[in-house]
Length: 446
Image: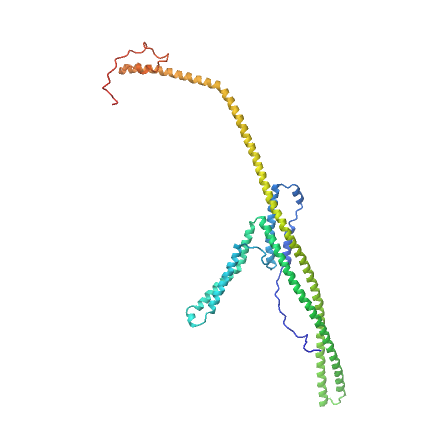
């Protein structure tokens, strides 16, 4: 057997990084959220639904979608896995990350330039060390800014989603489903690669198991030889009579050497026996792992195929839902317009009818008021005549007063006012006229 194979040789195995994932808590949270959506009164809601009810139901759908998207985002954080492009950032949100990344790259380049400048007394005289210190501070600040950029962009995304309409939320959910399909596909590829490695490991472990058994058998053969030699040396030692002789000492040394060889070979036998058992065990373990991984990969493939197909159909389904919501709004708008039209017709009809009845009533009141009007006018005219009579009586007194005091004949002044009045004072009743005073040259207004 070749001696270049030594199963007992130890070699450092490459360490692989693992992610500590709290699967139980995250999954339980998601299941709890989904379980809350059961509603035993859904049938009654459908039977008694009105367009106003649909508004509240649609708003509940929006709230449910919003909560689901938040839970999905929190879920990916809890399990410690970042889904590439799992959430679609808009340009302004992505710009927060891009700007921080560009700033970090600039700070790194400027720091490297400062550090790469030759460490000479001349450069140090012109501030090389202070420049490096300044760039290190700026680089640390840029690193801190870049570290917080993802959370800042995520916060902006969450803020935008808070006020998003149901169509945007449905699109976001579809986007996440499509991203999940890609991730499932990548996971299947990863599992397949591990399966191939495990198959190779099974082959290698089987070979090593066989080699270990062969080595064990080889050592057992050597042991048989050493057992025989040990038995012979012990017998030779007993046959030496002089225990103080050199021959006896040499015999003891020979026997001790053989005993050491036997001990060494027995250790090798135990080691190869254990190694063979270990390799046989790992053959079965690897085989079991392959079966489990194959089952998981098959399940992932089923989920991925269904999710991909369902997502494509669901996009059409969501489109129908959104159009139905818009149609409900249009229907409600049409109903409002119809209601307003009917009310307007009613109001106009009421106005026209009122206008006609008011006009007829006004005509009746006009006809009814004619005798009253005539009676009122008679009273007015009578009062008017009475007032004129009083005025005329007073006019006579005024004429007489003017005639007595100023010698002015007032008859001519007033007579034109009473020519047609039977009650006007007659000429005989009027006071005697006095001669007119000559006022031609006495113009008091001149």
